[in-house]
Length: 87
Image (cartoon, rainbow, N blue to C red; front, side, top):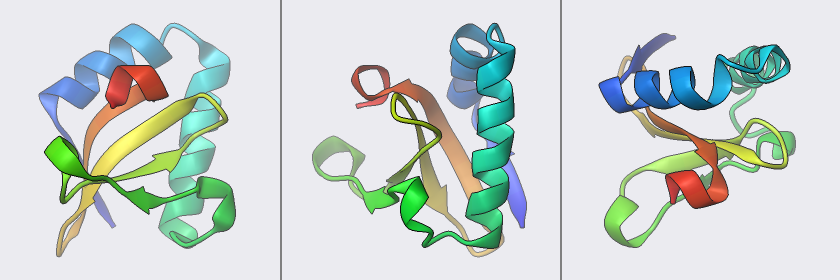
């Protein structure tokens, strides 16, 4: 599966995740789980509405979410952060 990261995702990752090594590991584990089993209930994957219609979100942990879109070749990651930061 090909994973594309938008400039906004890269910036959010650098500012919010990369500074906390434990979050980096959780992110890696969640992405791997998503690749292997996208419908796993632990991910709490769901479609977004209103201004983010067409995008989806899944959980890295209880606080951190990834906003993404499925593409024919894989995923495009749009944002990462807390519920308040990404919605």
